[in-house]
Length: 84
Image (cartoon, rainbow, N blue to C red; front, side, top):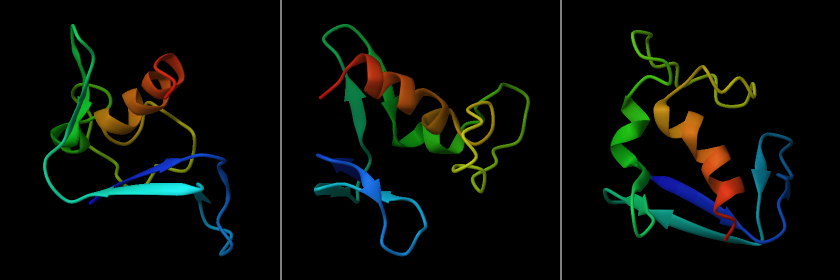
């Protein structure tokens, strides 16, 4: 399941991660697109962020975008560029 947070983003009360005013929980294959290209999708979660490296799904909070999956690597810059 993918969880998209919207609105004001703040630290989660547990101290782990962040939470927004609103959340969208998606439990099916998904894809974010513009009128000209696919930005990212659920299948990118299983692709390495750097070609030839292993997918490290445990390193999503380090801020190191070269680790983890292709989805995590491209999602943050994509959200900054295409602010919703």
